[in-house]
Image 1 (cartoon, helix red, strand yellow):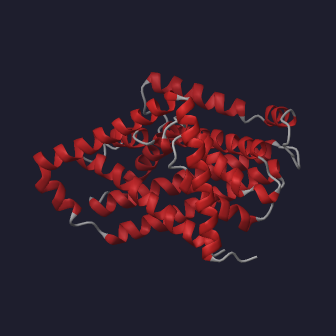
Image 2 (cartoon, one colour; image 1 turned 30 degrees about the vertical axis):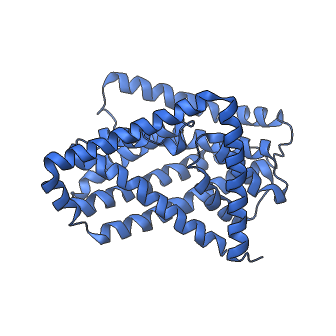
Image 3 (cartoon, rainbow, N blue to C red; image 1 turned 90 degrees about the vertical axis):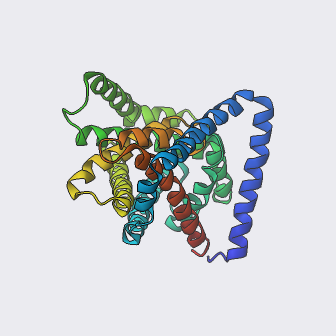
Amino acid sequence: MTIGAPKGFRVIQRVNRLIRERVGQAARGRPSAWAFTLLGLVLFGAMVAFVIYSLYHEGSVLLAQLTRINPLGIGLSFILYSGALALAILGWSAIAGRVTNVRDLKRHVKVYCYANLARRIPGFFWYVLGRAHLYRDDGAGLVSISAASAIEMVLIVLSGLVLYALLNLGRWPMQWTWGLIVGIGLGLAMMHPRLLQWILSRLKHVDVVEHIRYRDVAVWLAVYISVWVLGGLALFSVVWAIQPLDLVRAPGIVACWSLSGAVSTLVVFLPAGLGVREATLSVLLLPFIPAPLAVTVALMMRVLLTLYEIVWALVAIRI
């Protein structure tokens, strides 16, 4: 069934209105939510201030680099992001299909692209609420969508840590090694098929169509590792568009992207890791590019990814 643009926009408007109402209720009852959001804004503002400071002291060099941006690199980043988005949608559809019994791929494409816009609302719950609202006509309730989203989030973090570990074997300090071992161990334990099946079987209103197997978890993990790889290559394309780098630096840039994304995903009370991802990514990029440019690239990635998400949300309306 084809959904025209007006109807699609009405769906997005209803979701946004519902989310704003819920956010307002939560904010009145939970002052700490505002504190976390304020923390993210402070981090984000600090980076903006650092960019301004860098422009003031090294503006001529930095502006010269920005004015020579290669549009080919930006275009390539959009293509790579689109590939990462397609894989992320496939991963989500596989997980949701097991938990919600919704098997229509077109439906998952539309919901995923629409809900991406809701990720800018502070708090993981509002993102899940938007998904649940969009799936309401498919018989999938909030509990089912929350369970599927929790599995997805664990896989995102676990795959990011695994990829970073694989790309940096023997290169990090001992404290990083133990931290990665603990993080990956916890993630693998949480994704154990028997544990997942046991938890899902005890949740009300969750319809598990088939038993989750080791092969399923392995395939999901491989899919999300591929998502990180394509996303990291998109970051490399943006860096290359500003300051050309040798291709041998690509694995290091991909590692930066996967670790910063895994860290920001853990901080679910901030809007899409507002401030945390940019700060982490800026620090991790320092071995590859100068500090002012690293912060600029981190901020550019946020703007570009937001634009790309809007583009694909509009495309999803026509599906």
